[in-house]
Length: 159
Image 1: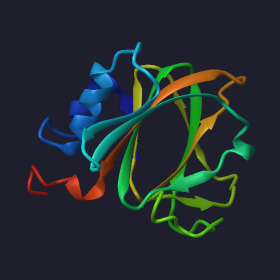
Image 2: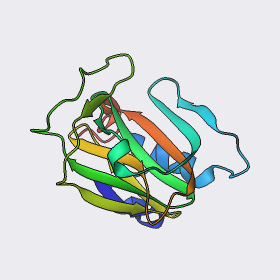
Image 3: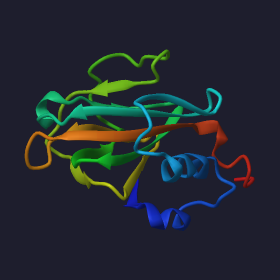
């Protein structure tokens, strides 16, 4: 898991990285743009722009993905995303190949990341995360989640 300000993206990967394509989309997205799905590189890199209200952590599921890395960025509002290693967590339901999602039972051992405009977080398959949680009070959030296929990482850099 990586969390930092969008201005520091270059500390983690180069412009040749598939992750940069996601950051570039985020940096160039117009807040006047509509919610919905945006193709960046076909089915391998795409963005979902969504609006919702934050909820109590107890009502938000902890999740992870196997095929895609998430880059999460809040356009407006503030939310908390919980994070913890997925290894050893009790699965709540079977992995959905179609939706690339695995849900876990709640746990009290979780790190909280406050997400506000200007901050991005990257969640890899080993990172369980719990997005959409209340910061101080229920609040509207507008957010971009860029999905980057895991197999693209390292292709352009030879890693």
